[in-house]
Image (cartoon, rainbow, N blue to C red; front, side, top):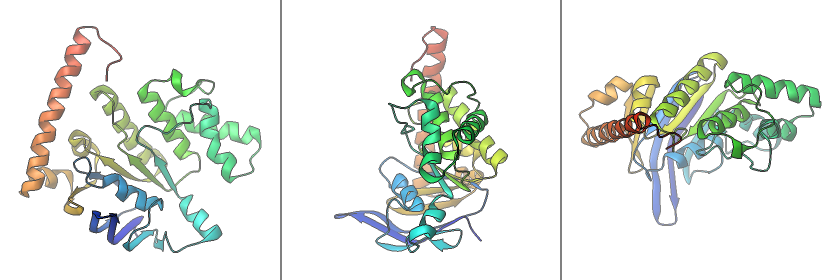
Length: 265
């Protein structure tokens, strides 16, 4: 059984057709990347997987169950298997780190405060953020906010983790840090991980498989090496453009560090 299956998924918003018959099968414990240019429907595809958006046509199966067909307690139970890390973390600004991570536990369970405290500490430890429970999101760096968001997603012990552009807005050093964290979390916790990204380096270094989404369709599906070797002209243009962009970012980051400029994105 696959962790997630999309079968001929179509989605339009008004006259704009975003997904045009997307089919994917993601294996359990796989680190799977969905890559493509901005505005191609990657995040829309991800939101179908968690049931935030329903397809106009087609099916989305989570461990063999149609996520849009189940109701009541079965629907809650199925959705609890999926955790999501949103693009900018989506932390509650008015809550401390502790309260952010504890939030889903209070929403779904009747744990004692002592039990919640232990789970929060455990999840923060998983993302190497011990001892910051009292801090507010505004006191955290961009990389730390992403880690707290991951800890919150892990609070319910999901079997599937979805990441929406997790390295957006981060410099190359922090991008590598978050990429390693995504990979190590998969290895330590054993979750299926689906990452939406446009970062070619992340795909090459960490993906088990990659799907390239263009114009609402899957234009490529395979390993990172097969992706780099593809003779599909859409893939070739994307790879070349992203490598050039990544090299420029690395150069700028290195110049800033040498000049002693810190905290820049």
